[in-house]
Image (cartoon, rainbow, N blue to C red; front, side):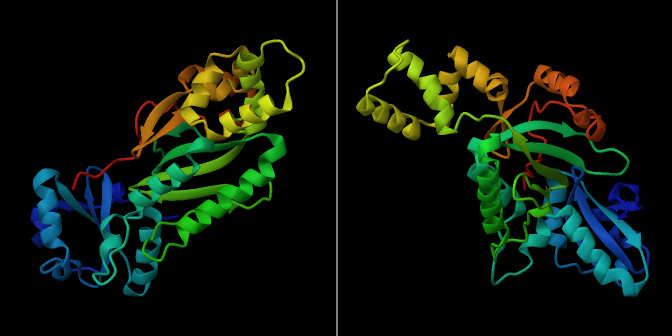
Length: 311
C-alpha cells in the first residue's frame, strides 16, 4: 500500500537547499494538492537545478508550495514513481512533453461528466480517512430494462475518453459486468467512483411519455396516433432541465423519478450535476444497508469536492 504524502518529511520550496542527499520520490504540493511527482538518486542535488522550479516558484507566490519526500533504494525509484503518478494524477506531470501538450486530467474529467450528465446522479462524498483519498460517489441511472444498454453506452464513452493519446487521464473498470459495471478514476488528489443504480430516469423516453400524456391529453384513454407521434417528438427534443421541471410538477413524475425530482444541482468541475440531498441520503441509508456498510462516512454533496487549481 502506498504511503500518503502528508505523512512524509517536508520542507518549503524556498528551503530546498536543506533537502537530504538521499535517493527518494518527491512530491511538490500546494493547497493539499499534489502538483508534481518525481524521482531522484540525490534529491538535494536534483532540486538545485530542477526544470520545474521556475514554474513552482510562480505558484508559490500565490499559494505555498511544499516538498515532501519518501526515501527509498534506487532500484525502487522508477516503479514507485509510476505508481504515485497513477495514484495522484498530478497536474504538472501531464505537461512534460513539450512537442505534444497533454490535456490536464481536470479537463478530461469535465468532459466525462458532460458526456454522461443526463444519466448521472451525485450520491455523496466520503472525506479522506486513514491516509486515503477523498472519494466522490456518482451513480449512472438506468431502469432494470435498459441497464445492459446503459452499461454498454457508459463503457463506450469512458473508453473513448481514456484512449485519448494526448492525455494521461484514465477510467479504470474495477468491476466488469454486462449489466452494471463499476469504474474509478483519480483527479487532483480526489478519487471518483462511478457505479450503476437501477431506477427510472427522466431522460428515458417511454417513462416521460406517461408524464407528458396527462397535461396534453387529460384523462382520455385513447390517443390518436398522429398526436402521440407529436408528443414523442416533443419528448425527444426536450432538454433535460425542461423534462426535470415537467416531472417535478407532475404527480406521476414524482412517483416515477423520486431521486431526480428531489435532488438539487451542484456544479462539479464546472458541470451541473444532480445530487442527492441530506434527507434523500438518510432515507436511502435506512433502506439500503449496503450503503451503510461500504460508505459509513458518506455526506451529501453541497459544493464541488474537486479542487480547481488556480494557477
